[in-house]
Length: 254
Image (tube, rainbow, N blue to C red; front, top):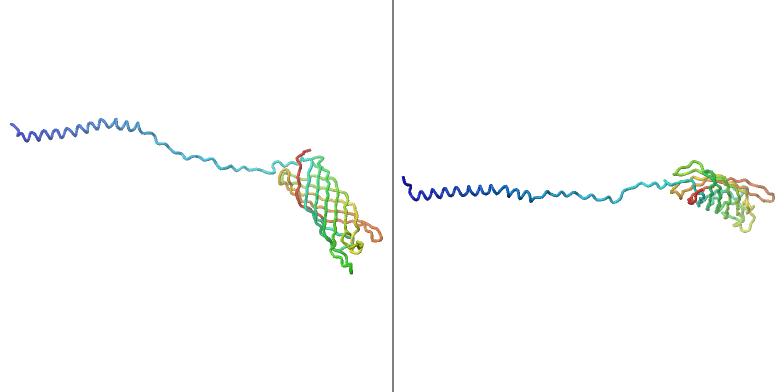
């Protein structure tokens, strides 16, 4: 049986239409592996950006300023502000508060023992005995000490030390300079004179560095002033003194 020509044409066109898409899909399927292989080979592993570790601005280092404190220096010297409470006469009821300077130096002979010398000056005003009609009040007085003796190093560590000393010498007491030409007996004062003295006490040292020391020095200031009110005699006085200041240890060692 013979098909009509128009039907045959439609049949052929349908077969061709079905075959062409199938061929295209097969061709794309064959090309896909090479395409995916090329793209996979061309891709590189992602780069991980790690944060940069910055160096610290500074590291705290603990420093001990007293680590090099030693007690082997040959010489040391201290300069301190000094205070002295004294009486300018043998029978005065009113004492006087004097201020001044204390310059002290030591030469160490061994670890524990040194030879120490001191020079101290004190100035101030003093109460006076009733002296009408002259009416002399608060005359100026002064004392100048010069002494030397042994010094002993007691308990000590890098933080500080306790030292003791006993020094002997002389003191120049000046009491007549502000009496308007009157004798010191008018106000109950001693005469101007040089008298024997003894200084007994010590130091409390607080180390601030291997060379610098904060120093406190309490002392008993003993002196033997003579009295000349017609009959000569001697008065033994014991006064309290204290000084506060700094000490320097020289680099030279024993």
